Image 1: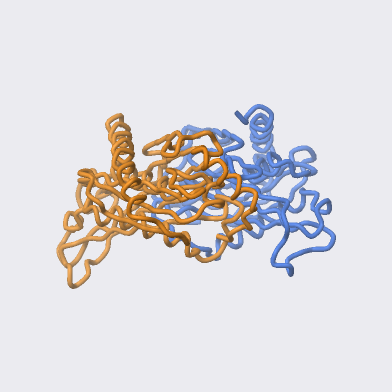
Image 2: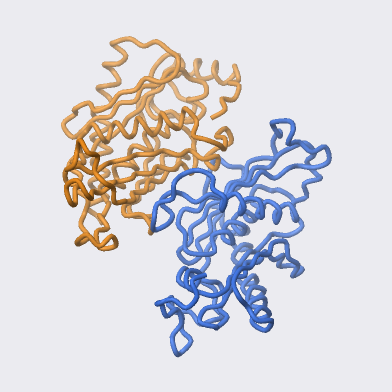
Length: 263
Length: 238
């Protein structure tokens, strides 16, 4: 992503608002944008979700392939998560090989899901040493108005939880739901005008400083953390947003559960 | 083209696998404004095809060597999302998407008044979210609507549609099975107000009579699709 020149005016405008604990779109410090979640919206994917947070829109699709298990893990399949931010999603995203930013996005989303252990790779084995499922999760940005991380994270877990293993098409048994035992959720906080805010939009990202991504599992266990961009933060600031993340992750997890029950 | 396959694409009563007669277009619906951060955008759902297009610009053309002193350049990209097909597509440009991007750009350059924006660039991004035959046509059509939605001056919009032949019968607007097992495919890009063409490809085998029939089907289908494009632009956004 090419970083546009940040107008000094935007930066100082956000800083002035911060003095009064305000945000440019009228939200509270830890208030997120409205979230829409749609499940099974991609007919060619074995599991899928679409997330809209304000003007940020993303898709996630799950596909399956048959792989040969790695020799040192003959009883395990694999999980791969890849994020693509194509130039369709905004004027600053460029064509070409994946940028460092989009690789970071994919890897942070991947870690949150992988490390939660929500997918047991041994469940993916079909014939030990010969055949196993590779689950491929692709997240795709349609419109980037900030905080792609959380949108990707939410779409990713919702898509996985809605997935069906296409065993019949590959002639290795009967179709069955993919076993996903946990619902890891990511919450991201950006430093804007000297304090952390939740769910920054594009302007806050451009006129802000460092960001912190927190992925929490079902029992508030921490599964991934990432600090991005230049900036310094204190232990007290971190404790503050960690507290916020616990309640917000729980809310979003309820949303995922509710949507899946409706299916 | 797989020749006569195992799949019977059209039955003895002339009804196709998706229930259409040989001269019918798949259901088409178009909406605009689907990518809020873009200057113009459109989504077309056409049968099972689901395609989005974004337009950014006119903007400064860089690197400078791509600039043209007398006109804008169209920077067009066609891409299929990894989850858009039965077998996952590996991300990244391939020869097919490169060719489609090129012919799409040339079709759109034929109608956009590029001379109004010297030294600038207009980006057109086409993404196939779900594919069911005729994605290049869906892409060109969606891109035309997105350009109009962005307010880019054009002499006309391009309507693109493909007809072809299956089991020696000419059929309008090929679906997936017909594309896979059929004997010919004739995609065209039509200017609905004049009947002129800006895009043409063909592969397979058609007699002169069959070619004319497929051509005529495309011309008729273009009228149906054009109506939906106009409807989306006039009434669609919000």
